[in-house]
Image (cartoon, one colour):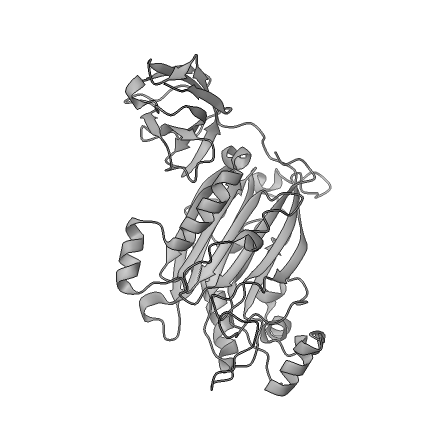
Length: 435
């Protein structure tokens, strides 16, 4: 689990231009890089969303989600949540060990777009508490074209101001301790001609273009943008390429290259506590230090040039999160009882360690180790038909042998909280016997 020295976050933004996913996403996810990742957050734009296709995807996962889940599940990453609005898709994966400490998951979306019917532009977001720290991820696709820089800023601000969550302490995006805003923000490089752009890129003198990047320029004028940090643009502009090549647009339109695809982050500015605001003051010690600090540092900010399915290249950022955990015990302790195999009824025990909004709709799933998401269970049992258990009451539930998989192997039990929309307790991995 995370210690004070923290864990690693791997983020991707990619405008996939309605393409089907490549078969191999190893380099996109940098699966073989050390130290290993703890959280993956992947934001896609322009996922195929023609009406027929979009209706079908409401019933089944889209092909991008499939490829990512199929790649990450065997490596012990579970899809925590996802949110989709037409072409915008945001996915969060976490190592199994972190699941009980990712709580209060909520998603929302905002349609924007000066041409915004059918919601092709806007933002989708996920927020959750991570070991007690409030974090939010916002995947945006802002207005296109060179001369719409102001509209992009307005759309970005509109999304930040209008998205809300059903949370008392963090009703808005910017209330969160850490916010990551990323996506196809569509900012272009102003003023320079195509020839100068290309020669600067080809000679590796990218720094000559930074001062005319519209996002960098807008940051100087807009106070809310100044609260966001971004790593240096030491990678080639990621738009616009001929497909299946590393050659910038050779079509008649000859689009100017641009850093359209970006990953920004913001640490909530410290506000001194009000005298009468006991609750907020409680996390600050007498000298005003945050008792539960979180430090975000970027380790890598680059593009992945090897993918050619889209006219954009994906952008990757990796971060180290140093944090002091607000808690490190799960809300529910859960364990299998005795021997499990399909030739006899089995039992499980669980104990609610601390008070939370439990529900008669909560359930305990039996998962094969390497499962893809909370809904990828082999079987499940409802926790209680009628009355809910007391804190620290030891509950035993029997599991009918007909429900136990015939195929033995390594399994794990997970307690799913309907109110928190997450697995809040996991057993240790255990063996189910072969029949």
